[in-house]
Length: 348
Image (cartoon, rainbow, N blue to C red):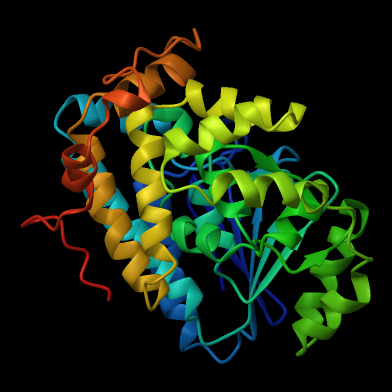
């Protein structure tokens, strides 16, 4: 079987169903058409006995996927956001399908893997990082909240590491991605081609990956757990920032500055969402919560402004509204979390 569309390449390589995200000039950022193609392909392959294993990779050498196509999201949000709501709905349903896929699903998170790229990879059965991997949920930087099941992944990370990553939008290298539960195996990039060949031939993907993997690289966040756990255990973002600034740790001060540069609304809602995600019973419940939050963000100011500053004009000077953490009230957070007619995902 072989079929190709402009943005996704789909093929059968021995017993491996290969899905290649094929927008390398855009860091393989996701369009709605890519989401629907991948979903349809996975649904077909689930019933195809020729497919033993599914393997996800990205075209080019820069990354698996940088997330959603933010220019498209920006323009649609300015026009009311109907297209983006549909995109989120189909994307989150695909994330759930991947998490429960009946066949081994192997994701090669080589290079940049962020946002929507996490949704396509980190819920898979076998998740691989390389020395080139940069893994992140950077949504608060653009006025959004970690989604695609990222709130659950962050909530389940050791200690307060997920809170730190979610509020700052900081990136993880391969060692930190393994530490925080976003990946399972480290395979050097020079071995990926051989790994893909072996996956096409072997009925045992776990054994193939184990044969090509190397010992886990160092995890810088492991050495910073003391101040991270102490500072981020606070009961509000404001108190977290205060603890970071007063800790006497240079890295903590840098983290505070990152938080203060992100959308005050987004970091406050992210904090609430991550705390709630710790008690939610499933990925689907987290996706349902994320869908409500994402739809609310589409009707706010900061998402359009954040994308403008980071992607459209690239001036890196977003004008958030409200502009300070102290101006974000409980009612503002409740508006993002509250169920609304028409904004139900219906997965949980």
